[in-house]
Image (cartoon, rainbow, N blue to C red; front, side, top):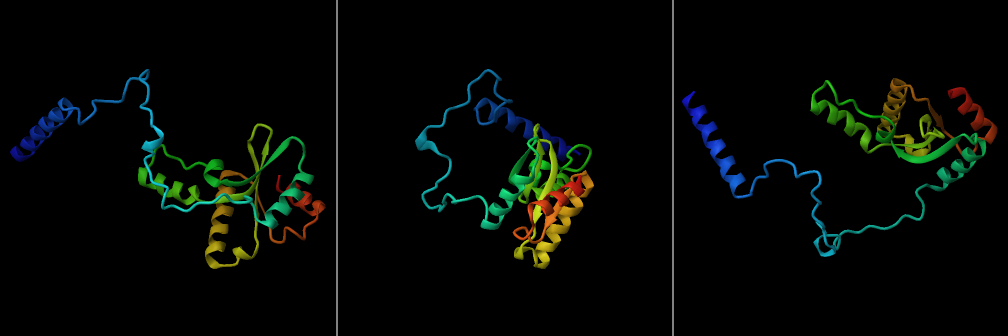
Length: 181
């Protein structure tokens, strides 16, 4: 017990000294205080050894062709969003649970995306669309597809899959989407 009290006293002394020396901030900065400005030569990371490039398109040729078909059959009261992160559409609940569980659930959706999302004029999610090409044949891809199916069903978001998007006519696409609503 005495050992614990001594450790606490030592801790508070160290915190006081750190605050006095300006090593430890005593709280958040006042709201009206301007944020420090970062100058061009103070970039906090080094890109000189990194290799990035601008993609010519955000879609594959098949996705682009299918998007054009989708745009032809969508009503004017909707918008089409391509390659949207699932986390931008479906949130992981944070309140009333352990933080690790929240992070685990968030991690499952943060780096995954829907191929397309049909949204209303107010950008409310209406229908998620997945194109199941040859890359969806592996066991890992099928597990991810199953996860997306169950997740979308759980939150009440219709998810429509097209296995041969280039062969589907606009009428077939329209019928499949209409059946999902």
